[in-house]
Length: 506
Image (tube, rainbow, N blue to C red; front, side, top):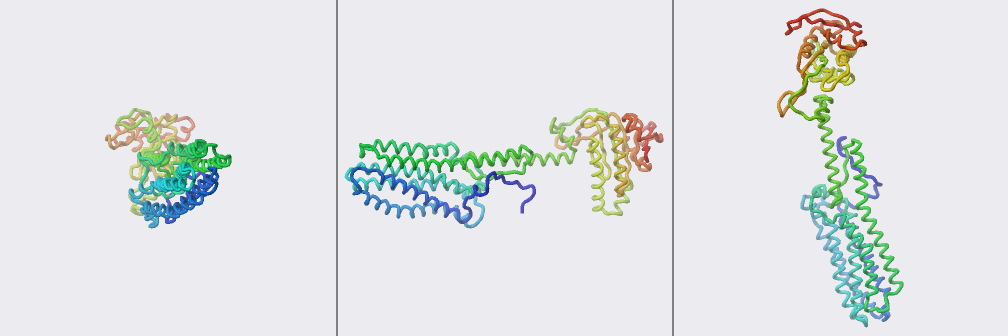
């Protein structure tokens, strides 16, 4: 079962373009594919040799074809067994359906190279053996050299195509192996060697074959038109296949990477690409996955940071860094506290009280967010909020007074708790306090203390909100109309009288 936070794999093309044998049938299917590719190569070389006329008729071709058939009957089973034995470790963990170890994964990544080397070895031995047989069967011994060279060129092309085919067919095996053994600095055949190999198959080997046909000392009149045409057709077909395989091996992952990067650019970090290449493309795939995971983790930390200190404080810290210290600012402080919380927790129990507090604080947070304020801290069943720090506010006093009224109305409508709200305005110190390893953004000053003391008065007032006179006078006229003068009181801890204002519309 996947989690909503699990990365989503990017696939740009239809599912059929990504098909590759997997599981316990992967290695046998790849071996069968290699056998078919080599049989096509054998048929091509045989047809080419048959089409070359050495002037001696067909007298020597029978023994040569018979020797080639006998060799293939022995070489193909031997090569198949050698390939299976070479990759028996890979076949074992595929059969068992488990993740490979690091060594097993590294061994599986050599599957295309191992298969191509075995195919090339079979062709090399065949070229060495068929040359003397041909030299002995034809009147001109140089025909044996021609046959050996043609077989060797055919083997080079077949081994190259075998590598590209196996690299394509083994993508699912490669992806599993790379998941256990991510690509590092030591790469297998990368993009540049792969493109050079494609050039060799499409241009190098065919053109070399044409040149050798004209330089063949056993045929001074030059090759027949049929042989040249046949060689060109074979070059086109082999070149087309090699180009398609290389284009898919390079282009398809790049399309996936492009789509993944676009999604990351749009803020969707829950994305990943399948790492199914052991070369530079695999490094790029792994790098994009690492980048997306790192950005997702950074966004998660940023979200958690913002939830703990407030989005405005978090953004300010990200923009300017964090350090001990701060600045003096003119702010409006709003302090809200639940009335009778001690008896309330006795009646409800701790678990239910936590749920009640969360619903109450949700009202406070939404009100602060809409008004451009900051919930500076939660203190048990109370909250300290400020307007005008850490960012400027065009009307901090008016916004705080409006927020006080809105909180009181929303709490009254919910009917779960009773609160008192105190509002004060003035100069405070705002910034980071604590230690270098643990910081907290806070505001310190007389308005904060005054708001807390006014909260106690507000709990006994019908409107449940009390503000200082300086706060109401500093607010805009529209908000000031909702308030009226209240009593003059001497707040605890203050040696001067405070003129209070209370809500008018209650």
